[in-house]
Structures are given as structure tokens and as C-alpha cells.
Length: 348
Image 1 (tube, rainbow, N blue to C red):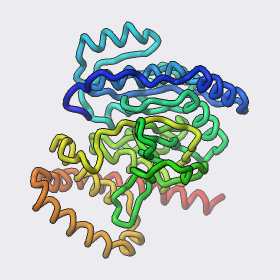
Image 2 (image 1 turned 120 degrees about the horizontal axis):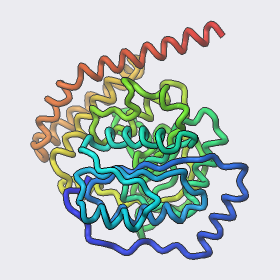
Image 3 (image 1 turned 120 degrees about the vertical axis):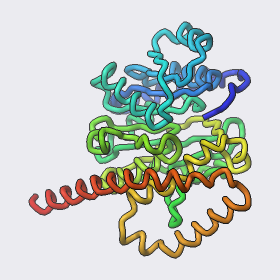
């Protein structure tokens, strides 16, 4: 989330030929499914305007678009409402990205109950015209897919932002291909560990099965890693996460390796604590023991970095401890669900 408004920028211009080609590709597909869009916005009005303009150019149009605006700027809010009358805007209290995304899913259920998918977007994402058509159509072909994402690239750089998420042995999730030049190395549709919350498609029929305590995105996370927590849970429960490279979007991304200390300390602390919460909730004992040497080395490195470079993160250990009990309780719920699945398979 950004602490200040960005300077206005010109929206990316897609040529008529690009739009026509994406429309022809979409029309050639076999009955793409329907979808609705939810966006959680926090003081990113220039980004949001470009995101909404890219949605208006989608060859497969959404059933509805919901924007949840946190700590709303009334003037900017009113301007966007006038510019995009087809969009439902709601000013909401700050429940973080996780809480905002959950509320967006609830509003989609209310406004577009027949939509097969929900597309959750960051406001700093700008979709190519064929993004939704490619992603929804491909996800529709894979009934076990609960989550899907496309290829996110950095604007005007030729660099990949995310081609899905991987989970290394240190359990610090990474965007696949991040900072690599896009040379076609991730141009295959395939299953991946996780989908970036910047542009995540969710199959709505799977949401009840994914939710714990009624929350699809864990609101104890507030922001950061709620997408990998959800992806990890989906994998454990037998769902699949799909990466579709033909679904391309541009993602500005505020947090990058060389911009770490431009991010507010409170935001960095959420990222730090959520590393522990997602391990507590999701890591099977067997893989925890296998990965324990790597995890111990990683924790020593994290502690060293905190002491030498970023002491403002120190209180994140306390937050992890305070929320750890909740994470353990949610783990028990998830394990009980997995045990029930195993018993059901045994009876089948």
C-alpha cells in the first residue's frame, strides 16, 4: 500500500489492432465462463484509473466491477465515480488487503451471484485486452483449478514481475521469474504453487471449501503473503493453481528489492510476521522436519538482518507470538478437513 498519491501518469495505450486480435482470440474460444472483478484501493487513484480503463477494454467483459476504497479521498472518489458509472464504488474502513478482498468477494456474491469466477486485482495492475478472456477460458478447462494467474510484467522494461509463485525450502515465497528478462522461458500454461494476489482469479464454487472461519483470505495477515497462504491451503486441499502466460498484465509493484526501505515499517512488519503465520498454519510436520536445517539457517540470517539493518522489525516477533495461537487453531481446522477428505476417499 502506498503512503502517498503517485503523480498522475498517462494510461497505457493499446492499439486497435491489439484489441481486435484479443477479441478475435476470445471469440475463437469455447464458451468462456463469466467473472466479476474486485479491487482494493488505498490512495492509488492514478493507478486505479488506468486499471479501470484496462478493464473497460477487456474482450471478455466482467459481470460487475467492485472497487473498495480505503481511507477515501472524496474528491478523487467522486471523479472516478463520474468517469466509470458502471463500476460499484464503496468507501470502507481499513481491514488491510485480506479484509478488503474478502469484502469484495462478498459484494460479488451479492451483485453477480451467477459469475463463475472472481478476479481480485491490485489497482497498480493494467491488463492487456485479452487478459480476462485467456485466464477465464483456460481455468474453465481445468475443473480442479481453484486459483489462476497470468504473466505479470514490469511496465516498459521487458522484465517479468511474476509468472506464478514458488515456495522454496526456506518457506520464503518468491515470484517466479521476477526481475528476469522475458524471453519466453515462462510461456507454457502449467500448474504452479501459487498465484499473486496482484491479479488472482478464484473459482467461486471453491471458496467455501477454501475458507477458514468464513475468511478466504486470512485477515490476521492484514497484507502481504495472504496470497501464498491461500495458495498453500488450496494445494493441501487438493485444488490446483494454474498459470496462463497468454493472460498478460503490467504490474508496477511498490515493494522491490532495491526499494525495501521506501516501504513503511508497519507494512514491513506485516510481511515479516506473516512468514511465521503461514508456516504454522500450513506446513506438514514431515516436510518441516526435512526442511528444518534450511529453516534454521534462514532464521539466523533473518535475525542478523533485523539486528544490523532493520531494527524497526523487532516488534514483528511479538506480533507473530500474539497471533500464533490463532494460527495453530486454524491449522487444527485445516488438518481436520484434510483428515475428513482422507476418510471420504477411503469410503469411496
